[in-house]
Image (cartoon, rainbow, N blue to C red; front, side):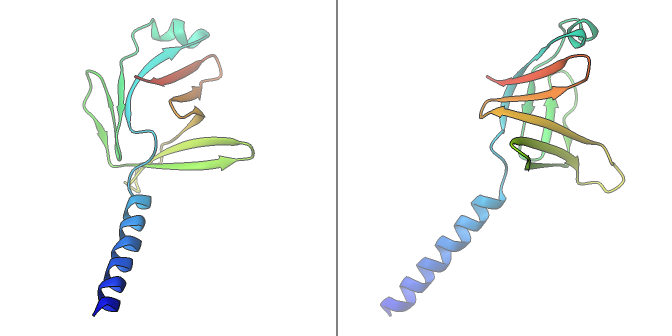
Length: 118
C-alpha cells in the first residue's frame, strides 16, 4: 500500500513539473517602453505601457492582441524572445532581444525600443 501511495506521489510530482515547464514564459508582466535614436522622434514620446501575458500583448489604450506564442530561443551567445501567432494565417513574427531578466529590446534599425519591467 505504501508503494502505491509513493508511486502516485511520484507520478503527481512529474506531471506537476511538466505542467509548470510548459506554462507561460519568464517575461510576463508590465513594461514601460523607451525609444532611442530616430525611433524616439518617430514615436514622439507617446509610447504606451505594455502588459505581456502568457499568450497576449496589451498595449495601453488598445485592445489586447491574443492568441500569441512566446518562445525563448538562443542564437549564438544571445537570447531572444520570439513572439508569433497561433493563427496559421498570421505570419508576423517579432524577435525581442533578451538583455536581462527585466529588459527586452527591439532594434528598428534607426533606433531601439527598450522594454523595462515595472
